[in-house]
Image 1 (cartoon, rainbow, N blue to C red):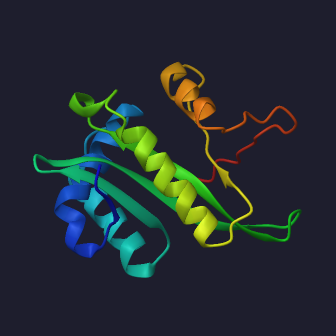
Image 2 (cartoon, rainbow, N blue to C red; image 1 turned 120 degrees about the vertical axis):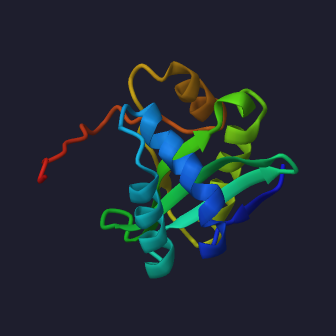
Length: 147
């Protein structure tokens, strides 16, 4: 499965994937918002996006954001987005994208990768755990809505 780091030239392939990802999480379709958001991330270097594609076109993506861990005193990555087109699911693409993210984390000296998913997304949870991801049972996750 060809997976490569995406660039600005990949926006036409990334926008429908990202828009589909947002719809999966019950957000309205908004390709203009998707294009603007991804363009900003890629232009500013705020994130790393890996794109999976084959001869038929784009099949999925993952987006990682860099952070630092004060406790482990080093860099880490938040795997914020993972999406595979519905027709390509269960074909190993999600697994390949997660592996590419892991390789990137190792190559950049990260202490760990983190992700979160919906409690009802049992298929994703099984995939993560099959790849060695460990569910955090020590800490609660809180958010403070600002907008």
